[in-house]
Length: 160
Figure 1 (tube, one colour):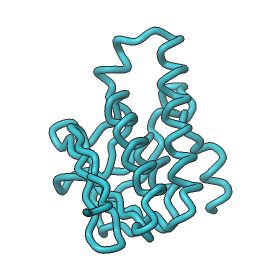
Figure 2: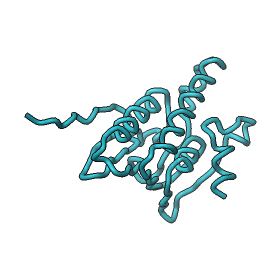
Figure 3: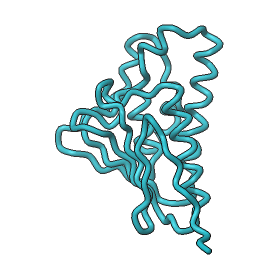
């Protein structure tokens, strides 16, 4: 009898394990892999699975397509939520990035394009960041008077 545990399946991300590496691919290329509440929940589940699987020794996270790693929050979703829901969205995002940062296993961000807002913050939560030559990093929300909500104000100074 096999003791293998099934890998969870998702809608907004691709998650697979090959050997001792787990691969997480943001799979919303039409919206530049923007983060919405559903995607954040799936990221949490994937990284919890990777953390809890003793056969996984490291994780690589990237974005589908060739334009974006993660281009930030899904503005269409944010435009429809209340301030209370926005705070909850931010807290969930912070918790997921804290999970990534403190996974106990190396997490490599393979940045293949835009890493903006929450995408830049996700990259900063990873152990190592590898970027293509045309990758672009930024926190454009500050130009709108919005604070980086997933811990970027703390991670960026520590990394620098």
